[in-house]
Image 1 (cartoon, rainbow, N blue to C red):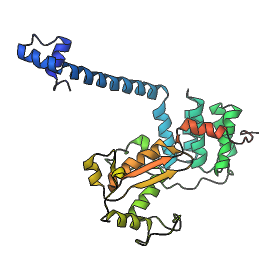
Image 2 (image 1 turned 30 degrees about the vertical axis):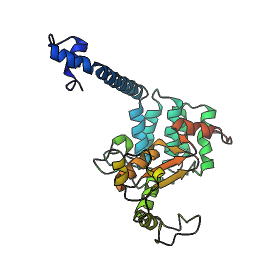
Image 3 (image 1 turned 60 degrees about the vertical axis):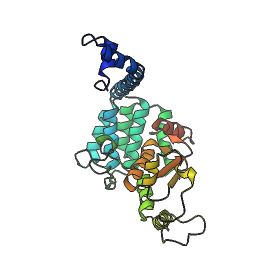
Image 4 (image 1 turned 90 degrees about the vertical axis):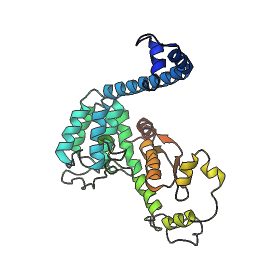
Length: 303
């Protein structure tokens, strides 16, 4: 940016020696645009610094790493994460100076991914987290979502098949975003024709063309009927022309996470089909915890 606007930058900073009349004239013509763009760059840099400061202050890298390890069943090096090693890693994290809601997220992730928690581990983890009875009640309310809360001492968690992110080179190929939401697999099955009608039946009469959801999409995409103008409104013409079929609209009742929303962009890029995702609400981790708190109250852990 500076190299493209050298004259304006020198004039603004009054550096680099005196400018000639020609250079000064060019600099003055470019000053309004230069100042406007410079303000935009400064704003982005300021926001980035603020985000990074909060990222470090709240220890989000360490929190996200252990969350990803639990979600995919292995660490960034591909080593399986389970049993006593996972409990010790979680205990170490819960003893850090992190917020109670972050501790609740970690405990919830552990209970869900390990298909329950043993009594001895439960007492150690709850003591280390120092959660209030109200916070504990929110965790227990996972029961109403079909989550198994406890398991016997002789029963280990089932071996989890690692759910890794996309291939190397993909924008999602970071250590802190290795988990791929189930919603992405479902939507991709529809796009590729792998979705089974027994699991995803039609809610009205089945179209005559095609034997599956994906086949229907393909036959619609090859139709000679022009796409209505509203379907491509807001898209650049070149991008709209590059799409190989009709839109796939996915609506989730109950809430959509931002990691799931990102899948729409990834699938659109990978399959050249526009994927639109919507929901009754967008869910953040804290909103999810608040919703659990507002559910029917059960006895907190240990009572």
